[in-house]
Amino acid sequence: MNYEETFDYICNRIPAFHKTGSSAYKPGLERSMAFDDLAGNPHKKYKTIHVAGTNGKGSVAHLLAALLQALGHRAGLYTSPHLVDFRERIRVNGKAVTQQFVTDFVERNIKFIESEKPSFFELMSAMAFDYFRHKKVTYAVIETGMGGRLDSTNIIHPALSIITSISLDHTQYLGDTLQKIAGEKAGIIKRNVPVIIGEMNRADLNRLFVSKAFEMSSPITFATEKDTITYAEMQYDGSWLFETTDYGTLKSDLRGAAQKQNVQIALSALKVLSNSGVQIRLAAVRNAFSNTVQMTGLMGRWQELHDMPKIICDIGHNTGAWNANSMLLANEIRLHERTHMVIGISKDKDIDGILSLMPRDAVYYFTQASGERALPVKELAEKGEAFELKGKCYRSVKEAVSDAVKQASGKDFIFIGGSTFVVAEAFILFPNAIK
Image 1 (cartoon, rainbow, N blue to C red):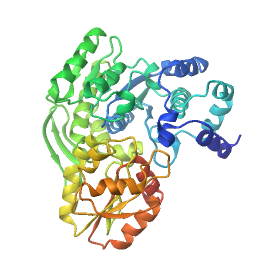
Image 2: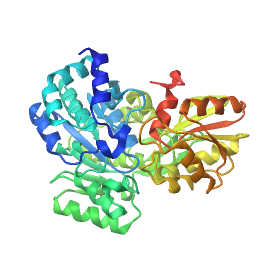
Image 3: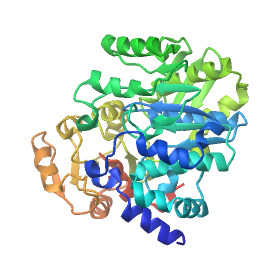
């Protein structure tokens, strides 16, 4: 197969959770371990950092990859989901896996793929581990897909484990309480491997993580307990200015209220890495913080797509993410004449919880992404009415965005989000935003 044929095979023949949801969900590590054995256990050829959590894990993973790259390491980065091209999921020093490697990898493993029928995520994980070996990375930052204990990335034995946050998401797979979800995330804690926990604000969750770390003889750090940030200020555009105990003033281009906690976690990770022998240089740290987006290709986190009217997109798709972005959203509403909300939500999310956090003083363009997971737009609009959210229904993201742009003046604000997949379909309408 050439790349186009390989791309078609991956997208149409392999079950993908981001497209179909539960029908593509394959918990368990058996296929991942078999795939890894077939490839000669590539993940053992470099050091890894494993990142789990309901929210924040993508930002933390990108920041850590930028830091390692700035410090002179060849840094692999495996994240999900993708926005435009599935190759975004696998990067080395910010550059996506090549088309040729994708084609070669599938051809080399086609018999296993046909016989064992791995999920899309299992295939991508195996490809990432092999590509990082091929590119001779020294560190790879690996983000879990869902949960942790049964996630296909959980075959690695990392140098550091990180759990960023816990909130209700994917409850049909991970459990319907925070304790159950935390228990699944805690499954990435490995014996004798340091683990960093982000802010939980729940004593019962903290006890759960302490108990698991004690069981695994793993040194545990609660990032919020570390006195690494002495002052933090979010700028008007959502970026941050930090005064830190170890690195002085740091400017971060990561946007949103949640980034303070994510930076706290990353600074705690730097301490652990320094203690393990990684050489930390002040200039490199400052460079990575200021240029994380550019260095790693991060997209979709409170990202500006257009000016006049100002158009912002964000992939936040659960109540935790919407709570974190509420301050930025309120600020944009205050600064602009009218607010236009292009919104679509996946049907397996806490829809009422998300809608309850949306501003009422806005014009809504209810829509749905093209995949099977999308909540039908008419149902979304009906649910929106219960929260006094008023607007029209659109059959596609393209139609919704086009009408929002048509209706908005140069002094208005347009927000696009509610689902990663809505943002992904909007992205192709703004080609200059694609990195």
